[in-house]
Amino acid sequence: MKEPIKNYKVWIGFLIIFILLNPWYFPSGGEPVLIFGVPLWALVIILMSIVLSLYITYVIHFHWDTDEDEDIREEE
Amino acid sequence: MEMELAFSGMSGILIMLFYGLLMLGIGIVTYLKNNNIHSSLDEYYLGGRGLGTMVLFFTFFATQYSGNTVIGYSAEAYRVGYANLVTIPFFIMIILVYLSFAPRMYKLGKKHNIVTPVDWLDMKFKSKSVSILAAILMLYALANFLLEQLVALGQGVAGLTGGTVPYQAGVIFFIAIMIAYGWLGGMRSVAYTDTMQGIALLVGVFMLLIGTIVYFGGVPSAGEYMRTYSPENLGVPEGGGLVRWSNFLILVGIGAAVYPNAIQRIFSAKNERALKRSFTQMAWMPFLTAGVVFFIGIMAYNAYPDLSVAESEQLVGIMASTIANQNIIFYIAMVLLFGGIIAAIVSTADSVLLTFSSIISKDIYGRYINPEASDKMKIHIGKIIGVIVVALLLIIAWNPPGTLYQIFVLKLKILVQVAPAIILGLYWERSHSKSVFAGMLVGAVVAATFTFLGLTPLGIFSGVLGLMINLVIYVGGSLILGIVPAEKEETSLSNNESGEPSRL
Image (cartoon, each protein chain N blue to C red):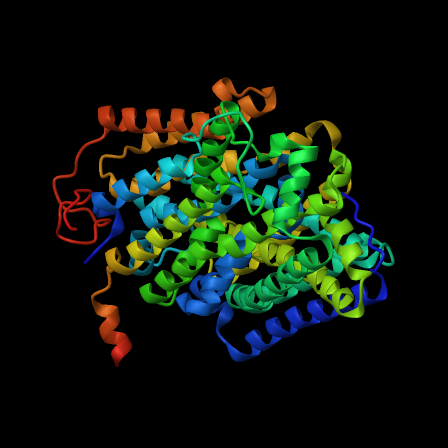
């Protein structure tokens, strides 16, 4: 039986992603760097959002399995 | 926000009628196909705990994303610029918060036949004061949420029909249909119509995206316009903006995950696999909805780089109108967009109303007023109170009481105060009901007071501040008063010491 809450390593991952989802680590002021019209910092945040979705997908798939009996019932 | 569209009118009325009758049809078919819907609370409010992956996904989707996501968020993106990009991660955060409690909540719901989140709190804390306070906070937040949808529905109908139909008539038409299919099929018809409504919204938004790119220009040129007209909208959020950003992630992530209507969808899942699959899909939806809507707002700079705040409120209407005037295909596409927006509003409202009724049925009437009543009677009472509340909210929506209007916009800040009891209560055996109650009450009072006074110390949202105080009282009080149970509690699922990280 696997439950995401019981696995502290999963939450360390979430914490790191959460910290990087807040744009505190970009230099302030100055002319924004645009890539295809999007500021660089925004692209990094979008990338981190994708990382969060990927990580959620991974955790759901590999760290959440609390059903012993249901699989059997479905096979029937 | 009044929306006047050049293209609207007869075609708007036709699409409204079409969508309305389609929803009603789904309700009737559901009713005819399931003859024991009204036999038990489980059947009526949770669809017999039998929703499969696709329907479950769409009902999560349609409940979470409303018409406001399209209209309000694109206007906000236009006004604030990239600082509003936070809407993408905050919708993903909701799924992250689900992961902290949904797996166990689902198991317990199935094991103990839990119908509402208050049910769970009652089972866990066995405290009348905790249950009643939580029920009141939830009903209050749900009523506000419903009110917001009714106001949005009025605006959507006005935009779609260009005033051909007085918007009150349009609103009454959709509400009557919503109540009818809700009454006929309960959660099942709400979930099935959500599927149709969710698809309508997705189609509409994509049509708007394509139209925007084709007729206004893409993101690169919008970036240049922004650099010229409002370079501040390209900058990184700093100081207060940064605090606002992280507060949004926390408040929306936790608040939206503990919406009672969202929690009820966890109970409605057919099995764990369906729940897992719909959550996985939900984790990617923010890019297709909030993300698309955000960039539509940004691309508006191509055509209208210099709108005032009031004008920007009508952004989606203005853009849709311009796009619709290009050719017949986009004309139809934009009618579909507005139909989709209205469908999305209805699909959010229907689930809020159903959950509202369920708390009345199960937690207020069924627990304290007439515990002997049959399930049929409880469902009946829930339905009737639901309709009365909708009628009252309609009166407020049409005659907003000026000075007190603020009361009606407080929802997430209040609702988030039940999160510690719901989530922490699942895992922390030491949780003590008196501290839970005190934390919830003080948190709600602080959040409300600070909102009314307009105070945001250090830029922290009043809801987040209330939540912090709530947690301190909850945890502190439980440490002092709580007792660690010697034996395994019924809430733990395995033989492991609960709460301990035991497995990789």
